[in-house]
Image 1 (cartoon, one colour):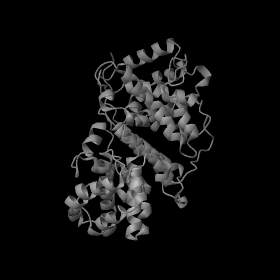
Image 2 (cartoon, one colour):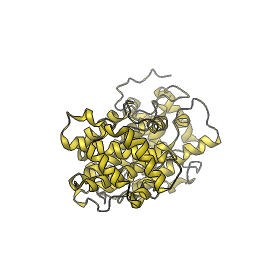
Image 3 (tube, one colour):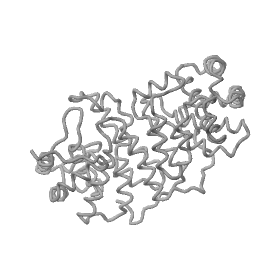
Image 4 (cartoon, helix red, strand yellow):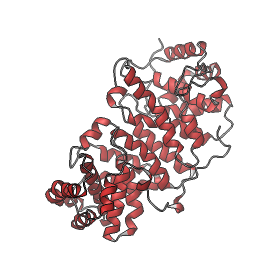
Length: 413
C-alpha cells in the first residue's frame, strides 16, 4: 500500500491549507473560517504595502485556531470580541512544537489581545498577531448575518467593529480595513464558501514539506483532535505507537514506516466535525448520532487525499473501521480488500480505546481488553496474529496504548 520510501509532494503552505479543512470542521456549519481569515489578512498586508509579512500571516492565519477543537468553544468565540478561554495559549503550545511554524507561536498566543497590550512584543510579531485578530473578527461578524448586500456588509463591519472597537487594533490596520471594505471583490470574498479561491496564489515552493516536517505537522493536528474530548487525550499517539509495534513485530509491513505513523496519527482527523455532545455522550448513540460519528472516517479520507503524496495515507486512514468479515464501515470491505497497514491501525485503535476511560465506561484492565479482542477475532473481524502480538507482552502493549500518560495498568480482572 505504501511506497518503500515515502516523500510528500507538497509545500508547507499547501499542506497547511488542506489540513486547515479539519479546523474549519469544528464550526460544523461555518466552514472555511481559517481560509477566509488568511485571505483577508493577506489582503490587509497588501493594502499596507508590507509584502514581507504575507507568507507568515498566511501560515499563522490557517492554524490560528488550532487550540480550538470543541464545537461549544467555537460557538463561544463567535459571540465574543476578545477571549480569555485559553485556546490561544493552547494553540501556541502546539505551534511551538512544530519547527517550521515555531517562530509564529507568539502570533498565535496573542491573536485575541488588544493592540495597546502588545507593547512588549517585537514590532513584527505585534503587527502579525493584530492582523489576524482584525481579520478574524471581521470574518466572525460577517458570518453572523445572512445578507450578501455589499453596502449592508460594509456598514455592519464599520458600525459593529471598526467604529466601536477601533482601539483594539493598530491605527494603520483600521485604515487598511476601511480601504478594503471599499473593494467589491473583498466584500465578495468575505462571504466566500468556495475553497480554492481562498488559497495563497503562489505556493511557497522553497519550503517543501520534508518527511520529518510532515510527521511534526501530523503530531500538531493529532493533538488538536485528541484535545476535543477529555476522554481522548493522546489517543492518536497511542494508536500510532501500537500500530508501529504491530508492524515491527509482525514483519508484515512492506512499505514506509513513516507513512504508517502519519496515517495512524491522523486517522481521526474528521472527528473535529463530530459535535461535542455526540462524542461525549454517556450512553448509546441514536441513528442520527451514529451517522455523525461514522462520518468522521470519510472526512479524514477526503481531507488527507487533497495533499500531494498523501493519497495512500488517506486510503489507509479511511479504512480504520473496516473489519475482515465485511461488517465495518464506510465501505464494508472484506478480507484481503483491507490492506495490512489499515489492519494495524484498526487493531491499535480498538486496543487503545479500550485502555482509556470513555464517557460510558471506565478503562478496561489488560485481561479484559484481551478478552474483548479475542472475541472479535473469533467472530472473524480481526486478524488473530496481530492480537497475539499484543497478548504476548500485555505490559508493553498497555504502555504503548497509554503513551505519554504515565499511568500504571489497572489490576488484571
